[in-house]
Image (cartoon, rainbow over all chains, first blue to last red; front, side, top):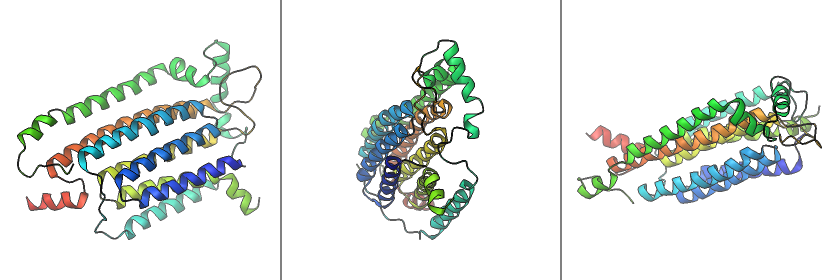
Length: 187
Length: 121
């Protein structure tokens, strides 16, 4: 059974999502996305995922918001209503939702200790990290010790992302100064 | 189990599905590219919830080993989602850089206007 506070937080999350869908001012959308990330971090704490909550609060609500605001500054912050009808997207979303809800029928009940996910490899990780005197935080032990190479790969992804952003935005100021016709930004 | 118990047991999954579908709707229906990227972010965060929800054990605690506790949540979804968050912000940054370049070239970030300008050429 889902606890009361978890139910309230999840309902708030859904409400903020509706606001994000309806909001046309992109500055408002970015701020709502920040609120969404903090709510998500709270839900994660309730779900015992403290490390993930910390990362979501700093990366999701912090860095993402800053990056989005920077992009808004460079492009313009008004969303114009689309000329198309929303019927097809609504239909696709509704069909997806029904299929996914149908799929939840067979899932194990929430919070049971004998669900399949808790009986596969997770206990051996918990035992091994205690036996080999790894950091008491098992998430850290898995991330840095057991699966250190995966974390190296993750760092490579971020490095590649950073290089990609730099290559895309390189020479921006020079281009703006030379100011070719029809290329004025809306900002 | 009565209907209410089923709903209370699966409420996490229902909200997860709602967030996922809302993100999908924004990505398909909205023309503004920054809005699309925010929708993609909604879709991603719903996946975090999808992974973390089954990892929780009622009566358990966060997976930090201490002799006072014996039942811990599953740490493996946490590790996976830490990676997903960080990779998510990297993809968001690259996507926004592309949007800025598009805005420089076309003077707009609205999908319909970009298609119209492409057809004019």
